[in-house]
Image (cartoon, rainbow, N blue to C red; front, top):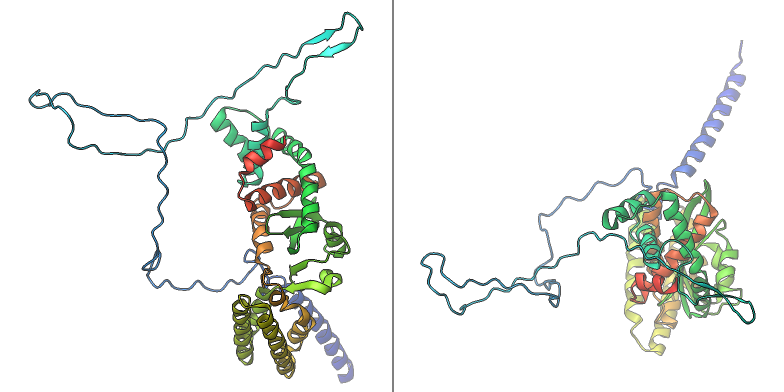
Length: 422
């Protein structure tokens, strides 16, 4: 017979076990329900807003029209006689001008035979090879460039890349061959990639962000370092400060715009924390607690004042910075009076020195959107391919996508940039 004390002990053990399970499930759920969860991972997505029935651009929006191209050829349609009575028509009283833009039909591959002659010097018996520009492999620079851009700019899987080349040029490749061609291109682009890292280190303002990427089934981290003229991608196992040190060095003196990840703390002399991240978290709290709605509104107003103050002269910006810091301190104290908001208020307080760097240096943006936009392209590729199979593939991706991203940032044609490096 079980006594009532034993029953209570058993029930307490069951409750304790279930409580631990609940806490563990809550912890796991945070990966899918937190203000920074990407839309692809959200399980319970909010219902779509009903349309107000108004489609298209608002009234007064300037009409977009493509620029009229210069004709590369001309076809004129002439009639000499009337089809009804056979009379001579003479000169036309009106001519309709119709432009047609057309692309060439699929073209067959050019197969060029390179004949490199070898000689023996009759005097010194040296083996002489004729000076030549013959390719080192079977495929030319245009093929290498096209395969690379189909894979890493157009986001096509290897089988689709191969299919596109066959459809347009009748060029037959295997998936493995296409992959090896991209690896060859990455090898050629290694020096420009290293030069990119050197330029990143010299930049006065850098936007940094990272996200997860699976390589051979193991979680890696895809980092991006963005300046006004460069985009650099790095894939590493680590999410720690050693990656930042590898790229920027330990004595970087410029401004780093980033989220609140502690890996940036050693560069605390000049950080700019991202306002979008903090406003996103504030919005999430406002949805859960009505008491936080006023705090959320205050954060949005402060952000608007920061953007406005960036256009002021230095002395005025400095006054605004000091004023906003005092307001932020008061806001933090008010949030601490609520138990539910203490964790958030601590996060804001820890970044107090870094929320207003953009007012000292108006060229610094108060958000990290530059880095997030750069990552978005590779996040889409991650959704398509799922992950990478080898470390070599990771290196190929980081090199090629960095060169493509930098070319676009500078307003250059990625095809010409890659082709000229081969």
